[in-house]
Amino acid sequence: MGKGISTSKNLDANGLKFAIVVSRFNSELTDQLAADAFQCLEENGAKVPAIGTFQVPGAYEIPVVVNELAKSGNYDAIIALGVVVEGETPHAQMIGDSTGTALLDIAREYGVPVINEIVGTRNWEQAVARCTRSRTSRGWYAAEAAIETANVLKMIKGSK
Image (cartoon, rainbow, N blue to C red; front, side):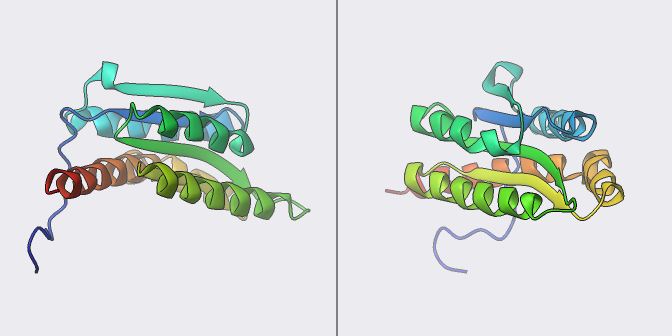
């Protein structure tokens, strides 16, 4: 590998600041996602005061809060958590597409990793399977991705 490129993931969250933005809609699942993300961050060295948690009504409200958090410059990474289950209308697809695009745009604009784990599923059983497995849930994955990506950016910015 070339100069500065590492093939091992760096999950050291010590000294990093994180924000978790979580939807209250489908809270029986989003609460678990948030708990798993928080636990992963803590177990990897993040201090409790360095983890901000912000609740919003639904997935569609996540990007506006993430935007303000990214603009603040106070966080090394932001984790977006929600659950959208497909129904009889294309509403779920619209939410998934629009929030995904918005979160990606925010990450690029502000240079802050925004880990999008607004879980979209076809049915409730799929949602439960992705959200309630503790160390293998999408919440845990989101926290690991946030730590690793924040460390990659820290390495890149530190080498300038």
